Length: 182
Image 1: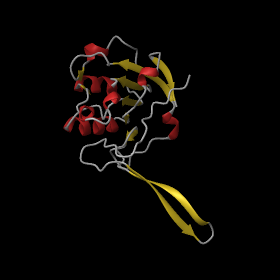
Image 2 (image 1 turned 90 degrees about the horizontal axis):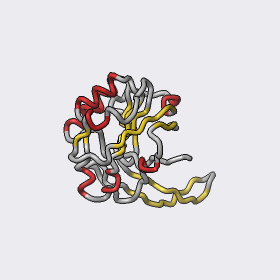
Image 3 (image 1 turned 120 degrees about the vertical axis):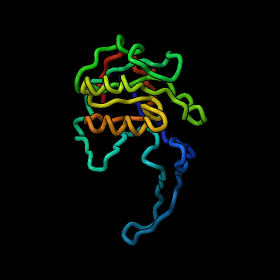
Image 4 (image 1 turned 180 degrees about the vertical axis):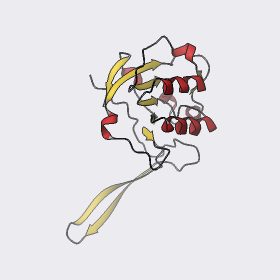
């Protein structure tokens, strides 16, 4: 079974506070060799829908790093907004090179203010990811942390060659805690 974990981009969506909403328009163009044609124009920030946070311009990831083993950590039933080691440590064995996805089911709040008040990882969990030398970490929320922690976590993980995938979707459709990521 294939599960699409990317979020749909819809007109008017705002993902990061302070950025303009997504704009999708249709425009007509003309070129002397092609004649008249219509094209869809998209306008949105790089922090829109499902994306990889590349916080350092010079940082690049090879395409083969976008394929690998994935591990799902279910944080959807946690009370409170912090995802702690005690909540996750017995769920799955994480190995070097893995994708680790945190399921919070927070994508259900997309489109309302609650989406911006998402769960976050504790510094201890972020350090655990680094210590396990994972390939990538993803979450079905705006980011791994809130406020200043958001950027701090992204930069810290990037310095350890771990890329962050934000705004995942449909993680509830992944039925096993071990899967393949493409």
